[in-house]
Length: 128
Image (cartoon, rainbow, N blue to C red; front, side, top):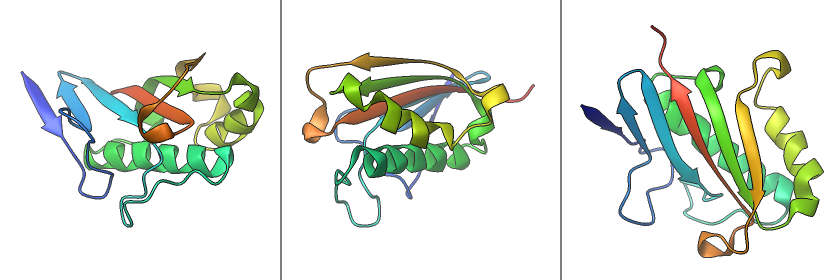
């Protein structure tokens, strides 16, 4: 049976989906973009600021489920400019311990919702 987990402190979905869904010991997080939940504004000044806001949004949804960034098993990063890889990676790495960082892929795409430059989805695991 699935359980819907949404945080009032993270941006509301911009379509017919939820922030996350728990099934068994797994939490599936929908893609997050750089919307500041407090102001409702997009943070797109720099790719670093945008990435940081996305990661903060993921952390907020995880916290609502009682999890931390350490519980993430895999992330998928969608970016509109692969040349920003290094700048994105610098911010992304700051949210994880290098030895226990999750699996991931980074894929360049043509466009993302609301004209953002990065969207990240994640899968996390609940402790046994």
